[in-house]
Amino acid sequence: MTTVKLPYGKEKLTLELPEDELKGVLTSQTHEYTVEKSEKELVKEALAEPIGTPTLQELAQDKEEIVIISSDHTRPVPSHVTMPILLDKIRAGNPEAEITILVATGFHRASTEEELRDKYGDEIVDNERIINHDCRDEDSLVEIGTLPSGGDLILNQLAVEADLLIAEGFIEPHFFAGFSGGRKSILPGIASKKTVLANHCAEFVGHDHARTGILDGNPMHEDMLYAAEEAGLDFILNVAINEEKKVINAFAGHYQEAHLEGCDFVTKLAGAESKPADIVVTTNGGYPLDQNIYQSVKSMTAAEATCNENGVIIIASECSDGHGGEGFYRTFAEAETVPEVMEEIEVRGRNETVPDQWESQVLARILLQFEVIMVTDAPREMVEDMHMKWASDIDEAVTMAKEIVNNDNPEITVVPDGVSVIVK
Image (cartoon, rainbow, N blue to C red; front, side):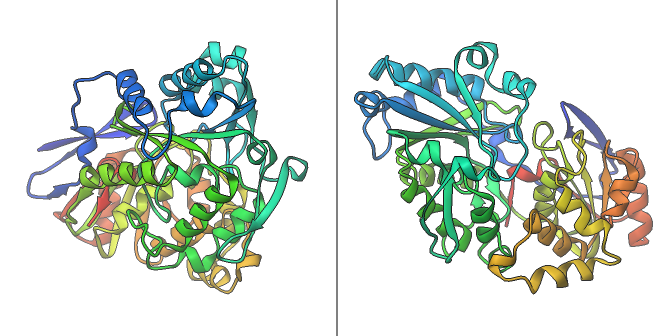
């Protein structure tokens, strides 16, 4: 038997498979990448020699209103490491600067105080100005132009009016933006509902280049780059992380140049050759990425890339926060069939995009090709409402999958952390 550990919430599940059934285990080398330096040393070195910009201290010297865009509770950015260093560097350049941490919620709900304390630590929460972006609060937004795609570019006013705009984040493969990080802090991070909906339209999400690991020719990426330029994003700090969510490299400086260098680093480590199988088992990388079904669609795309036609995808995702999007849930719960979901999405124009449509579109694409079984703490009824099957544990899921493919000894591929891998 071969044993594979699967991230699940803050714990790990154990999957045991006979060696003759295991086709392959697809992992990112980021999880095995070792570095002699500490997380803080890596971050400080990146900030000391930024790519394409002066140092943060130099940039901050004559700036009064400084905004740091920071990823929200759904992203495993180690802000308890990065944020104190960013604050120190800014204040070393300008001790009198007024600093605001703007939480880039994108289309998500606001981060709670408990989540903020978990992310930044008590000292920062107690002493710094932290504001959650709200994409629906028109009073906090300002229109600054038109995206290349034709959508209105409307962003958080605090960020647009800042004397110095900084963003922290992390770089991982992303299922339609190519990679996270960089320009994504602006769009969708601090964009209005209207702008996010225009960018996440059916046409773009369905584009052949809107896929994991692809930036060139990706229309969503092109809109995002434009938004970052128009917003005046001056400086980024992006990190690459391993399975334990520890920093293994850091990239600082120009929002595009530094980001591309980080993407190159991640690409070299994250690529894995496809091992097609009738059953593919994956996870969404554990907490905080597996807090809901909405986020869990991302790892399903890694499984999709290595699953045989009419195969079964098993996704182990804790989903302590339930479905993660009311519109996303209702789209499936109120539809009799999955083809009905896809047909309704594909006829919508860019300005007719509805909330959570992009996630629904990708999930529908997967469900049209494969059966999906969820091992999750989410209610069974919720999972089944969304046209997936529910299993109480990983062994039950494997048994169910074997029955579906009608094979007691099928080939099974495991992608232990689907959000960290680019399946080739």
